[in-house]
Length: 105
Ligand code: FES
Image 1 (cartoon, rainbow, N blue to C red):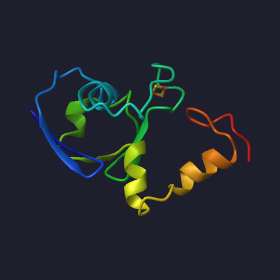
Image 2: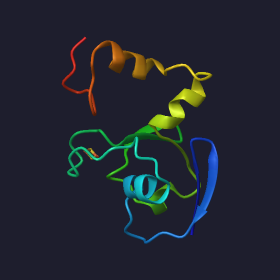
Image 3: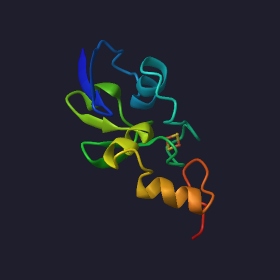
Image 4: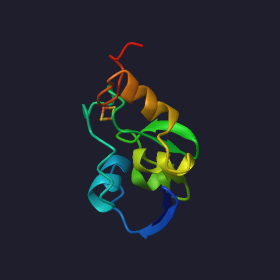
């Protein structure tokens, strides 16, 4: 059993010990804004905030997020009163796709 807050909503869930956080977010919670770009922990497309620290959710087990507050991309707007988060604005302004690593300002 894990208790996790995702984008301000509390979830109590039973998960497989080997389930990755990215799969929990996408497959269990339907939060498909968190994408899987490489599945080899290189791209960063799966990045979420876990207790305010960015993590690649494909390298974190869902059980490791037990008791944590996770902010996925959909939750960023909740931090800015419905406006785009500064990172989202930068992606939009510079045509960033997926992780945005190849995007130049
Ligand atoms: Fe590429 Fe996680 S899916 S780093």
